[in-house]
Length: 375
Image (cartoon, rainbow, N blue to C red):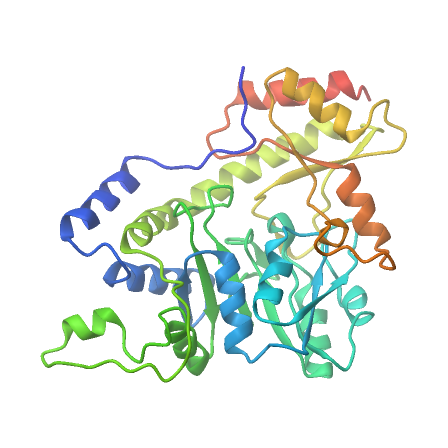
């Protein structure tokens, strides 16, 4: 048996959609990107969506267009993929790392507020593994300190906070379509906002600062000479990717239902096991289960790394818990201690979870965990 950590949920619909775009002759950013943006915005409940090449470029664009740059600080979790901090550095600003609530693996308004200084210009919480941050206190904190709130929602498409989907709460939110995320376009990202002016700035920024898009120029009945009033980047999604994304959106409800069903079976199987801890989902949260993690407790007969190695020998792929950015060489600061982050990154493991996971695969994962960590 060979069980991967995840597997994208792609089928003939995506293949046909990509082929149709190729046959059309318009394969770069064009009408399909616009259609994908409109459908995505409608799904999350935002006024506007702007497609990009990745969530990393989405975060960079959101920061740069908001005026975040040299001399500014942005509070972020250390418990996140390194792209969260890298995007801040790409904008010329400094990431400041906050600790987490170990029950949710997310930063809180309390952990963030401890890191705010006079240089702080923005807060960038991560909805880690698809579990939404407690947004209301975070929004209140940012209002009190006059800070921009940018949600790193890379994993959180389809998750809900108090009945509203992530991306629809009025803040800038950035999503990922990497193959390990809920839906995929191969690579790709999306920014959502309710601010008309911000959406326009983001569209220009992703297209070299060009005053008018290619689609508008080609559709015009007169010659339009573009200008470049701003400096931008090439962060454009292609129509091939967008066509795949449109088909993925149609399957999103099914994908999330299947992930939640698998997570529920894991929860039930590991209930009462004294050597591990399963995810906690607070009231008012709808979790898409982009990932499913367990924490290996100190009383366990083996370490997290030993468990991962033994499972791999059985053909079951796992991944370490979310990395702690502040422990990586390029961000290491000797004086910084984030005890909850360090505990979670060292003791957690991600288990296989994907929509096409069958019963035999799930049972095999559960049985191997039970063999290694008998309750």
